Length: 254
Image (cartoon, rainbow, N blue to C red):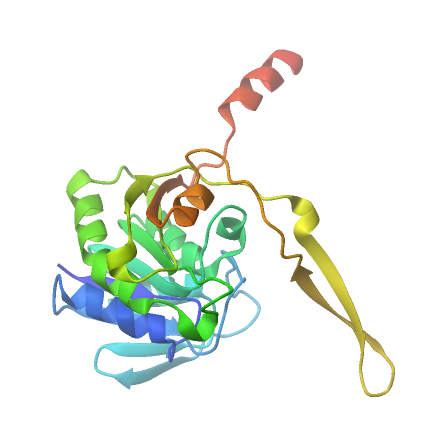
């Protein structure tokens, strides 16, 4: 088995090292192709106006000055010269990628691009909470449970153009209460805010931010699973067509 791994936190991210060890529990044939710098929030963006710079760090480890999508394409089309891997793993992201995070996440986009290129693909993220913070993330949770989750997904098989989003709860590995097959959750859009500030010359600049408030998660969602210390496993698809709306529109547009 050949595994290509990437992420959006960058080539030096701790979660990438975790994922490399997870991948090597399956095979020694592991290729790492990750962004040179943090690419969090870039979603499924593709660099078409700037050249891609590829830096070889070691025999099986490369950094790309680009997005996670660029990394997967470079890995398969350039480094592997079109010899597609058997599996693309993206992550392990520092922070959960659930609900609306899915459409912004570079981690999810890495798996999405793998699926676009016809390769079985899984995105993995490690949630953290306000008590532990980013520095206190329970990396052991993802590292302990990921091999079993990945193996189960591969054993089940993935249909073409389907990929999987896995999120580990913010707890030690022994505190995990199980695994849940989940749907993508939904948060209140009013959480998004604009934080206006001024620089040293008094000129305005802005940060996009989020209000911190409790949300009652929907039943069976990825949000609910993490709240209950369950590992969330959500199958996603490249086809974004809404079948119900399509039928209604077909009636109206006749």
